[in-house]
Image (tube, rainbow, N blue to C red; front, side, top):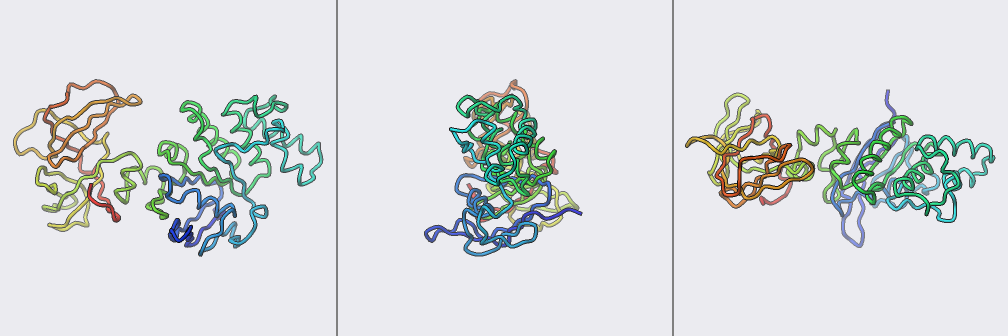
Length: 363
């Protein structure tokens, strides 16, 4: 039976009268890797600081292993934090940095030395004991910071965008290293980032945040394949948002007409009624572009605006009748389509996911 390590209960927080957190709740089980994902200003860092005890919520409770720690000082919580800027002591070598917390707890020198060696092996830095932080690369300094945070075997490790300062290749390598460490040690990680790829690659569950609220909390596949809101669909995977109204329902197959009447399309579902407005999310890689089509064909229609390439993906932007843009993507760099071509956009019904606007305007 899993153990709940962290529980946030209806946490609120304001700064100078401006709400930053609006009643968020979360449970993290032993050994879980949970990522708080969102853009700048959504409340990620404030949430982390409240868990660490660096901020006090206006209301709500923070429980660690079932014990209320809301007003407990940071140094009395079994929680450690890894920051983006590493925060290593520049005048101490690697061994001294990692073993510092054991030293201030007056542990025997032989014990400290032994624990430091274990940590160095864990983060693959054996032999770097006497190096100073200035003699290390960015990735090595981050490993030292992680080792220093793990040496006390905390119940909970908080990571505040720890890979943000690294280059792309090293960041991906460190993602794998962090996940390996987390699974080996069985420590609960709460990780914050604005990088959707990072969240999808590393997490057991993702909490997508906007305006101090959790828009969706679920596994990477749930968040990506079944977004609940238009914001989640756009932020995680950059989905296209299509607006329309229900034309008819035939079993689980629902036929829609786009809001401006320029196209007909389908999705699957059983909660729809004729005439009801609906918003769909369609991933670019699940859409198909067809240059040749018959009059009356189902789908959306538009004109190829531009082609571009990114990370081995071909990206084709299509301008629709209502001046909106639909992005299609696929692996590879070759396509016969060129700007100016008239195309039909279609998808399989199961690849269109109904979403809530959640207060967003239709843009």
